[in-house]
Image (cartoon, rainbow, N blue to C red; front, side, top):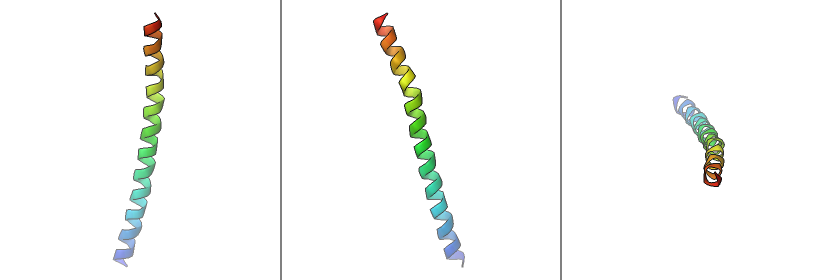
Length: 45
């Protein structure tokens, strides 16, 4: 019983970790794009 519960918790944690990693990657992209645009504008000006 205990082992099965532990497995379930581990599975849920893996899912959460994957979601967190995915969100982090998306945020990095979202934050990276304006920085690149700003750099391009600075180079033009």
